[in-house]
Length: 238
Image 1 (spheres, rainbow, N blue to C red):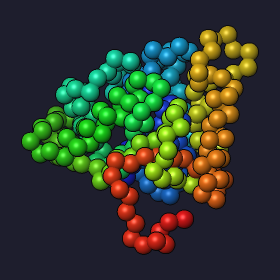
Image 2: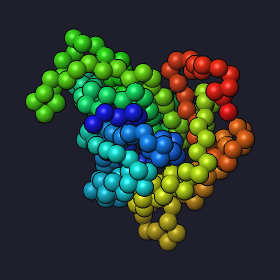
Image 3: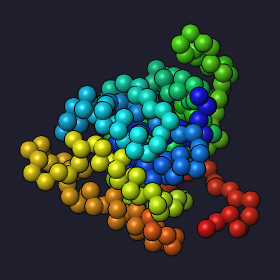
Image 4: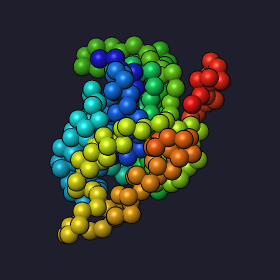
């Protein structure tokens, strides 16, 4: 299946938190959208990898995503080397997306910055015809996405552009809350983590509201880009 948009996350729930509203909106507009998780989040303080497998499926269903796969890289210990790049390249060539979205370029969790660079490098390398890959016994053709975007995560990085997700905040929230093992739950006996606080849960809304306020809408998500954005005319901007 050829996809229009392929979003990568170092861990299950990264994509939902970073760009869930945007993916839900694009899917509703008829775009083919997929998610690739690099790891199963097995080092997470709360829950288990097996629990998060089910949560990831529920999160994708909530957003209306067409496909979701997990590359089973080692949580916390994957690196940006040839072996891992080739695994990502196989996914890019399999789904041939026009747009790739991946982790924040700099963030609190070390896997986020690593995942960002790994996917970005793989997007470039995937376009080189002398790099040979095969998937399920079939030789793959070179493919380079038109553009790579990065969603914003823990840190308040200044976005290069924002996407209006008014009308899709409920789907974003539902997808996030599918990860019931990870986030704030009154009375839980699980250890408290930075993302399992009430403040973090509320921040999902107030950060989206603030970005929306700045562009005159109800809710928005911010992104950074690796190259200049271009429009055909000034009227393309909202």
